[in-house]
Length: 334
View 1 (cartoon, helix red, strand yellow):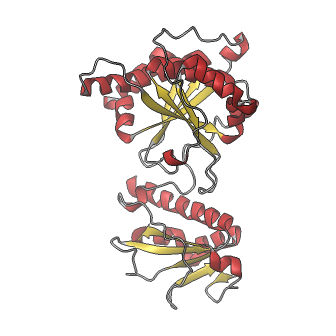
View 2: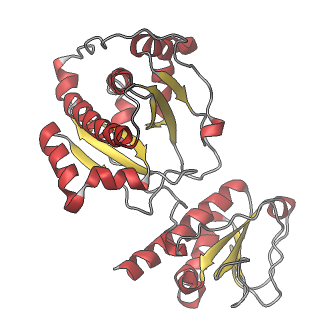
View 3: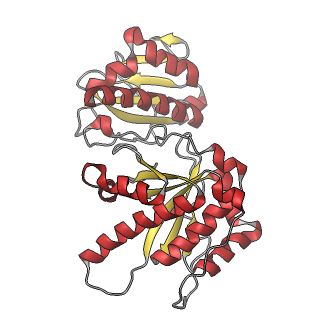
């Protein structure tokens, strides 16, 4: 996803050494109003934030007064293998918690190297697409002012339509800790003025189709493009019920996706008497075929599930299938 980012703005060529100016003072109402910030961390970094027995995250919550939540170790932001941290509370509480976390991760980076110069690191914020316009501003005026004031590099990724149900974009900040914190302060203050931003506060961490725990460390496989050519005796379901022939219109034949599902989880996808997979076909309008037993994705023990239809139907069906897989995985874990 990093490669698709729009180089909306970059940091000034020669930022001068300086102490960051004091943050702008929002109104007392906005300071007290609940807000939140989401950003990405690697699995290893998530472990550092949590600490032994949850000691670090408990301490950070106590120091900041904010609530800190992490997505589970199999819940990643689409297109990455990074987990999501959400911090909620008043603006000051959120900023304090973000600073504690970034400083912790930076200290571990310092411990690994001997260079005394404070490194420029990267942090990726998760922002609803509907709120990105406020950060950009007319003609890019707002984001330009944020870059000039914070001296951080700021990039906003384009909206990614390849994941069904993904309504968030990544805002990447590059700079020293002080530069990043000033940029986060400016961005969060701007976001907190947007009433739509609050509506996303209770959105789930998980994104449709972005569950990997059911595959024993092997992500499900995309085989694109392909025309579904399942064996004659393979299970076949769709909007016209179980089994039988399907209308082969041009759109259906031109869009197809094959994903791998662990053999032990196929039953949860199909459901008793094919109930689940028929429902998925009826709701989404997609055509779904499951390979025979023993017919696996090459190099795995995952069965092939081929979804055919419009792009929207494919993504919707994929989302529903992966939700079934996630449920199956949770049952195995429990």
